[in-house]
Length: 582
Image 1 (cartoon, helix red, strand yellow):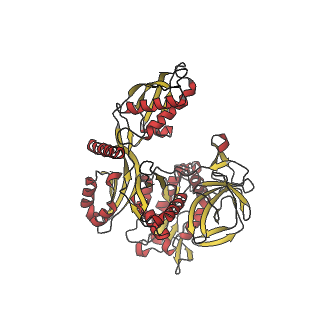
Image 2 (tube, helix red, strand yellow):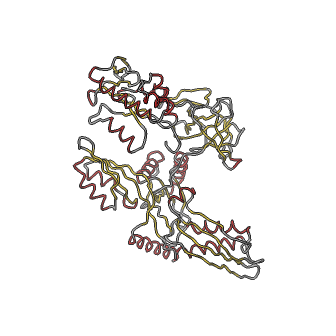
Image 3 (cartoon, one colour):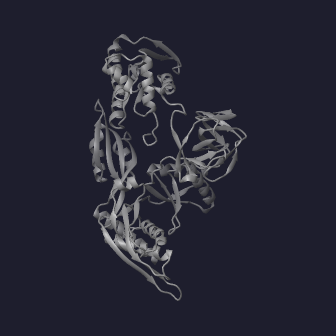
């Protein structure tokens, strides 16, 4: 949400559960997520005594009766809570004063802000992503849900208040402000696909313009023209037929053949909404159907899954001809294998998941390479000189791509028309490293000089020359193999701490933090573990904790592998190459 500057509010759920502690959650929002969060409500009782909430802005209590909490009773603040309400209301004003000038002035003058001033300040700073109001309740019993929905209306922005930008494809993706007005040309984004008995259901957010039943819309990405036969508004799993929807609405449609994150317009513009950030996959799995007759359904399943999930990648290995499924982790891939079996009746044979290793260099190394090939006619001649050097993580992040090509040639020893070919040669060399054949990243290639021939030099000659020069020089620049490291969050009962930390040590895990809850019954560990060592950990954790342990895992960064592991990977790669050659 920080990446896309999405205004937010928080809801602390399950306050009727044993061990519920809203103040710990608010501290975690501040410390772990670095948010300026503060409660705008107080719970009336916790665990089995939870009956409602107190509104700190209005100084009123709300209790929820009825089977589904549908009867909301408004009342005064309970006598035994008045001291806590004053304390937490002052804390709310202090947190707002840190970011809002109007409340800050009143706070310094020791004046009490009115209800309207507080609400306006919360809305201003929530829309500006500088404040997060925290609501409380128990969603299962509908306690606190009604005030939460009121908070959505009071504090979150209307579509025209939030600045959204589209990318102009005719001007090198120059950002263009989206107006959010229903009278302007249509701009909508398909953000989710779902398979239903009636066909593909496409969820779409309208950023600008009007969607009308019977009208035609255009897919900006592939140029297809589609007629809107049916538009529905979703209420959980129920559909409400509607004839039109305007800017700010989220609707669903049948009969739209598209991919997730495709942009739609009414044909009058060539703008595209920016797609969401999709991290690179960190785990791969070789898959194939158990029987040849399942091949058609297997292909259909993969096509559908990759349409609806941008983080799932499918490719056919050019060497082994295997279908390789890549995703964000072991569980991610397991879910899709199970869905193929359940939804398409395709039994899959899977191979050991392959970790996406990468390669890089450690030191600067010069190159001086001559490519000379003479045949009966025009030959090939190219010479390049320069050096390669490692890049820091900060430089890679700032650049926005894993490698960099710099041209520092002076004069015309290399004619300028061959510079793009040299860059293409660099990209060719980065596809497959010298150690284990993995993608290369974190390398800056600087071209300083070279030579050409009036007849024999060509684009292809310089491309081949640069690729061979870099491949040879990387061997002399102390190359390393990098492995993906995962941030793993583990929640376990405290009595299993010893066995779980021992298992993490065996998997080369580095514990970053250990947080015991207030009553000492539970423990939360944050650990960095190499992905290659995480296979099968879910089963091991369940067995170590009697099924009570849980963990989540997300990609953190790549780091050099130990020397012995690098030797093993190099030996394995060498044996695979020899087997292919034979």
